[in-house]
Length: 364
Image (cartoon, rainbow, N blue to C red; front, top):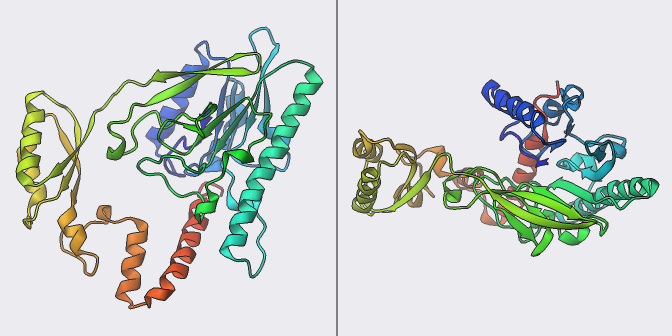
């Protein structure tokens, strides 16, 4: 079960597509009987859905978007003898327009309440169909639900994009129906339980998605059922490429790089410069330091510059040093927008970004 964000963009490269389809073919030729893939907020729903009929021949079930028939999200999986063994509620990332109607004059709080209510109602309807299917079979078959969303209190990692505007969109675990025997969620990169419950989990990303996750132990979840009771085993994912974040002043950074070089490290590095001295050629100096080693510097972050650029742009500043909210705040400051107007403008800005992110570039 792949709980969304197959790709990190709605327009994946040919190389990324090749890896995806090669992976599915390899799994289909293994002892794995079924693969279920749902779309995440980074994916193009129509791109994932396009080959779904072809992939179904390999027992790969793809749910890229919400359809008018919610029964499409309820999958009955059979074992090698053709007997039903599992019911999966494969709910893809629920886009705002899929679950919420817009009314004139709504406040942000009204929108958020309707959004949460829409998510709750969608899971209730899909799970009800799953229970009906189980009752018709007259057998004790586990129900597994999938989803791609942010539960309240979840620990984030690098590159996790807000799904909806506002903190209320971080849904409570209580919105999920009690008939779910195991809940498999995607979106958060950090492996974790939900409300410390064994049968509700984020598997997390199988690879580190940024240097902030370099020291995380990545894993996938293996779920085994005894009746309707799920037991969970974590299978560790090997480290295929070491990442290392090095912070400090120049001497500390150089010393740590040299120490890594003595171990024949092939790590990819992020350098966070925290020294007081202004260094105009920091990147060049770093490249000279790693010359002849197997290491690569992928990112240089100069905190001294970042501290100074809140009011003006520095020659050495790059967009990598700023997030999207920093850029917008810079724009407001440059245009001397009164600070009391900032919260409302920031909310509107985030709503606009959400609409743009939800647009499916592959739909036409």
